[in-house]
Amino acid sequence: MQQNSSARERIVASAKRLFAERGFHRMSVADLADDAKVSVGAIYRSFASKSEIIRAIVQSDTENTLGQLQTDIDQVREGTIAGPAAIERMIHEWISKRSDALNHEIVAEAHRNPEVGEVLTTVCSQFRELFRLLARNVQPELDAQEIEGVAELLLACLFGMGNREFTRPHLDERDTATVVAKLVLRAMKVEDAPPSQP
Image (cartoon, rainbow, N blue to C red):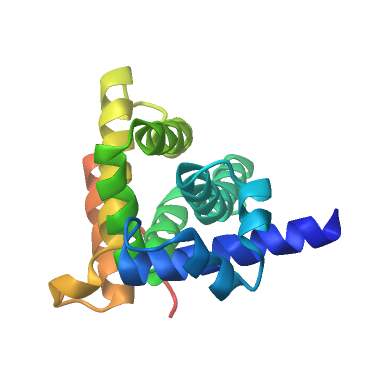
């Protein structure tokens, strides 16, 4: 069982790299097997299709982010971190995690492949639900429509911040997180956060 788990992890790690370098359709299963140091049969035993490999990539990439977001929400609810500080930290984390080419490949494939599209739809639903919860905890006075607006704004930030490198931004990562958080909070009618520590 442990060997199968290890092989699966190697396949996912290799798929991330090769998909980002070559795209989904120019990477063969034989290339993937060679890079992951497994047999072609091991790939088919672990995954029914390339779409299933993409599902595993998306799940592995979002699991930690969703977990951290839930932790931030819990801390805001408990009062161990202020809402504005949690939002700034969250945005900074998104900026720091970059996988531009892979993200673009996954989104492009989602437009072509309904299975992959459904994976992204599910993940976006999970993020939206947590963003709604965060908005309610940071600013309880928001109405339902405003909460939906905040969820959409944060989802757009999540998608955009991980893909900013090739746009040659003027602000560095820390300044971007500070300014964007301030603008999100202003949209939520929350007083600006005190300056964060580097």
